[in-house]
Image (tube, rainbow, N blue to C red; front, side, top):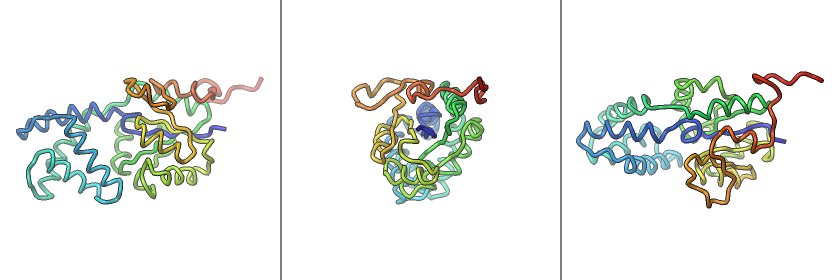
Length: 234
């Protein structure tokens, strides 16, 4: 019986991609570089994956992203300052997807736990949740700092099951990454569901939804009553 729904954060509850693309366009132009969002995303992904593999610290991966994208050698202090300049613009563009809060509230109204499972850094992701008003909408945050290995490693999901005191069939994973969220969950015996807002993975062969508000219908769980309260006895 389903007890908890795990939600990825960036790309699932929060529109990270749009914020990053808008930020890098302005930031890069200030430094004489064409702000190609795809290049920034590729550079960021490369170094962030190294952070996730514990090869770099969180500040180190930020510095490497700045140095490679701008193509300039600089001190750590200079790289930190430049990333902060980008980060301010990125943060200004943060936005919660329209379907996120209704979905979280529906899940909790049905008596299920709503847990965020992210590969991100605890301080950064906690701040993001607070800044966007999502902290009160979830029951727990589990980050890459907590995990023995990050998604899609099955050990990440094994840790989550142990922490929640749940079996694989009692948990559902929802995320925008086919590999990290869905394939990773499946390797641990957990059902994964892909949030595919742009219909990019029609041939993936995995369960998909186009809106997070579909997750309750997909899971087969019904709300207990209005505003999250149990239905009255009849």
